[in-house]
Image (cartoon, rainbow, N blue to C red; front, side, top):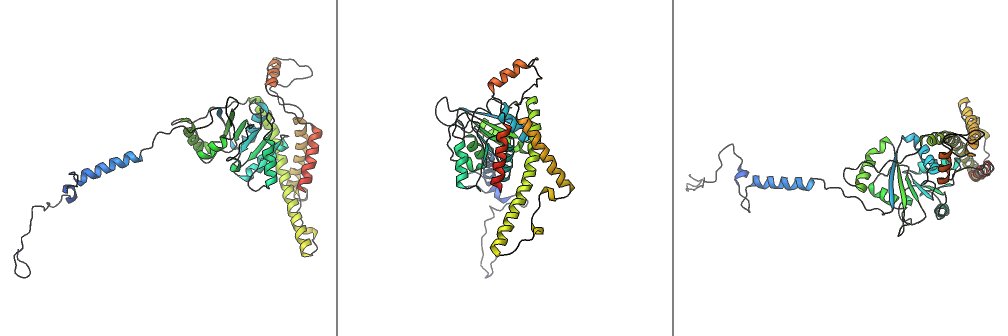
Length: 358
């Protein structure tokens, strides 16, 4: 082939690839394999790398028992109350109840208090003194102390007397579940036993299945069902329904009281006179619907006080203790001490709670 300057150039055409074929497939690599073979090998290695590894069970305390209760979200309060009051494990010692938000901690804690249970709350927005008081209540073995907490109590808490952990909200991560459940069954030896119960709503099943596989092994989708007697649950639902009305009414009244206090303090600091029209009214100052809610909550307080004065039983007896279920009821109450709230003590607690809000 003649060059630009009339010189002859020799071109080697032995490596020219016919048109329509892939040049890279013919090019050998350093190890003697073609690029096509190399690409297939790399894809195979990538697939092997991407394949999920078998899930091995996470390490939990050997004395820890796991269980779950499947229920609707709106029925979690009833199942929680029934488990704490009517089951042997739920009433056997101090209990930690975990929620995913501060708002849920406050609501659940207030509901349990309204039901007469010795419940305290623990979250990041509390003063240090209140946090320590809540933790101190858990240190009495065999007591029915209850602390409703966020995940601020899931790490670094070492109280051997905690017998039960209840996940009111399913943990968002597996590590969080393990840290929560690890607050019980602490210590060494046969006494290091405890129970972890998850309340699982339909919307939480996906996260719950991940936790089951992590702690039980691949393919496991349940921690084992915990049974609560239907008759006891029905009685618990009646009480919780009344308590919910009372808590909702108290919450509205409390918000109005706090807002009025803030207005008075601000007006006093600024040296201004506060007009009564600027004050926030409660339910009684609202429309007919608000006044109706207030009256319903008042009736609910009276009805709940009467119900809490008697224990929850599978069978109600008349004037004379007789009937087919008598022996069963006696055996149940030997295992689980009935929880009864003295009406006079309940009134004193309500007065103290009102003073604390004011």
